[in-house]
Length: 131
Image (cartoon, rainbow, N blue to C red; front, side, top):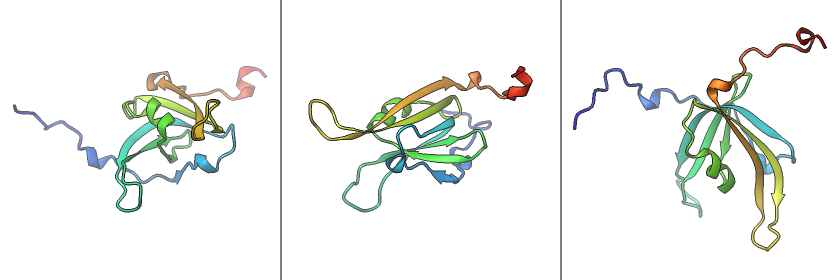
């Protein structure tokens, strides 16, 4: 099997270091992050008791800042299979929840996604709307 890579984009040339990491574990209920999902990376810890790979999502916000968000079971369930640069996402932190029927508490989110082509590039100011 042969492939023509002449016009292909190298995968490792698009990585940019994030400006910050959203630490939802330290956030208040109602805090959020939103923007274009620009990267999904699987990070394998080098040492420590947790050797399982974790997903790291990079979101480009409206100010063009890159924000990393570590995955959790809830986040991974909704974002892990999204193609970068194709989806706008919003994660709203709902707080740490203890299940009614017992079990371990977990970080809860309301997660939204929209296709990138539905982005609003030019949002009018309130005075432009006649308000």
